[in-house]
Image 1 (tube, rainbow, N blue to C red):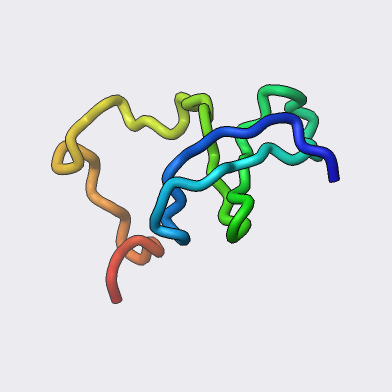
Image 2 (cartoon, rainbow, N blue to C red; image 1 turned 60 degrees about the horizontal axis):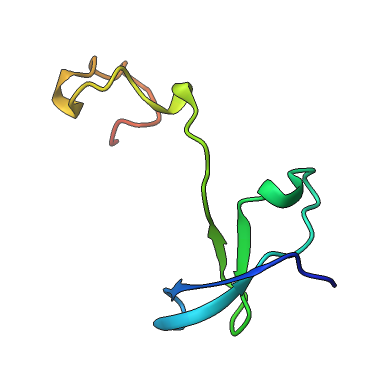
Amino acid sequence: MAVTGALTRHCSSCGTERTFQQPPCVDGHGDNCPEWSCVACGEVLLVGIPLIDGWIVDDLPLDDLPPTQPGSPSQAA
């Protein structure tokens, strides 16, 4: 498997700085692929993921969010 680059970052599994390599992207991202893997343990690191508007809820503090509906999966039983 050919790699397209390498960088050094902290690996939480190894607990130290490790080299991460970017394997060929199977998702079609090309050189902009966010997936990097630790050469020592294989842990995956995502770098430079673009934010999607759907992930942000109007920048409101959590206590300003509307209450959950009864029976929703997010409510504790």
